[in-house]
Image (tube, rainbow, N blue to C red; front, side):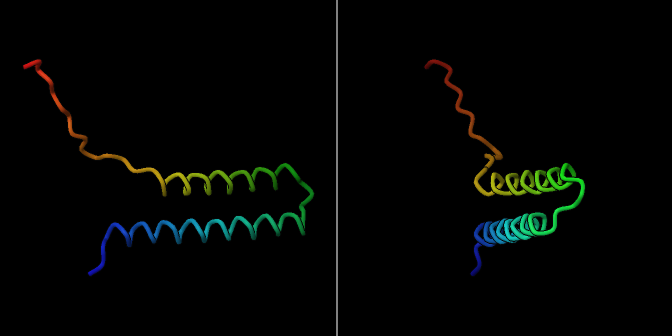
Length: 75
C-alpha cells in the first residue's frame, strides 16, 4: 500500500532535484557563453535561484491546517 504523504513528498523532492540540475546547467551555459548584456544574465540566474530557494523551503515547511485550540476557563 502506498502512503500518499510519502509519495507527495518524494514528488516534491524529485521536482527540487530537477530544478537544481536545471539551475546548474543554466549557470554553466551562462558562464561558458555569456551574452552581451550581463545584467540580463544576472537577472535570469537570480530568478532561477529564487525559484529554487522557494522549492527548497516548501519541502521543509509544514502548515498545521487545523490547530487545536485549547481554551482554559480557569477551573
